[in-house]
Length: 232
Image (cartoon, rainbow, N blue to C red; front, side):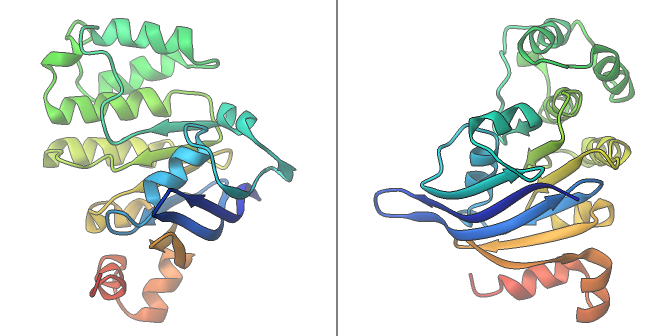
C-alpha cells in the first residue's frame, strides 16, 4: 500500500521549473533511493512533502486522502544542511526534539545514539562532520512518522560514520513506514534499498525494484545511474 502518492506535482520559480508534472508513489515497508544530479528536483520534492515548501500545483495523497499541510505530521524530514542549534549539547538537543515533535521516542533515540558512539555531554558545535551526520539521522529516525525523507545523509561523511548511518537506516526499516534516501553516493547505499527513483530536470526518469532493474539491465544501480546521467 502506498504511504504517499504524488500526482502531477509542479513547482515553478520565476525562471525555473523545479518539478514538472511529477508523479510517483512511496510505498510502506520499503527503503527507496531517490537519485539524480544536483538541480534535478530531489530536495524540492522532499521539502514539498515535508510541508516546508508550497507546491505550484498537483496533488499529494496520503493513504487515499487528499492532503495539504496536514501531511507534514506523518513526515520526518532530514535536510542536508545542519538544522540543529550549535550551542546545545546532544542531551539538550534530544530534550528540544522531545518538546517540539509529537511522538518523539526518547528511549529509541538514546539507544541509537549509544550505538553510534555519541557522547550526550558534547555540544553540537564540537562534533565532527561524521558525528553530526550520525546525530541528525538518529534524531530524525526517532520521530514518529510514516514517511522518512533523508536528504544526502552521506555527504562529507567518513567511511566509519557512513557504515554506522547505513546500519541505522537498514535496522529501522519496517512494514509500517517508508524511508526515502537521496544521495549521489549510489554505491554506498545500493545494498540497503528496495526501490529506486531516478529524477531528471524535475521529471520522473525511471522507477523500479532494485533487483528487477539489476537483472533486466545486467548492471548495478550505480552503473545504471552513470548510464542515465552520462551526458547531464
